[in-house]
Amino acid sequence: MPLTLTLTEGVLPVGSENTAVERITEAMLKWHGLTGNKVMTPNITAMVHIQPKGTTFSGGKPFAGAWVEWKTPSFAFADREVQKGFFQEATDIIYELSGGKQPRDNIYVNVVHTPDGAWNLDGKAMTNEEMGQAISQG
Image 1: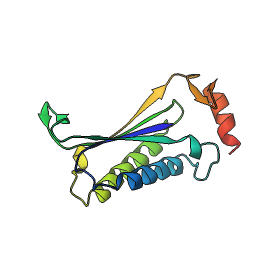
Image 2: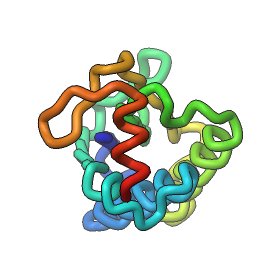
Image 3: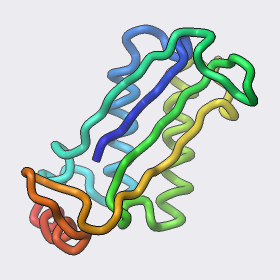
């Protein structure tokens, strides 16, 4: 389940991106009750994109932002309490790592769901039920 962390240059101190990815990954696993799961943990991947100042916008005007985006099967983040808790924690992580400088209202968290059956582990397309069975083995 890939995490894409996109940041305007300067939102986080250089070098803290690794800490952000680690903490956001841990939070995702925690909120889904999967901390330590041997199937899910290695299948959470991440990409960090640092955008130069002047290339990120709000309302058509340049600004500094942070975006936390997950691509997941549709059963992930389906519970409202998981959504609220994780989104708050992810926002807090970025805010804290910015030294309190990044405004919370310029930290965005979202989830993109794939259709059932359009996910894979080990190169095999799996339904939500198959994914659940695989995860339960971990």
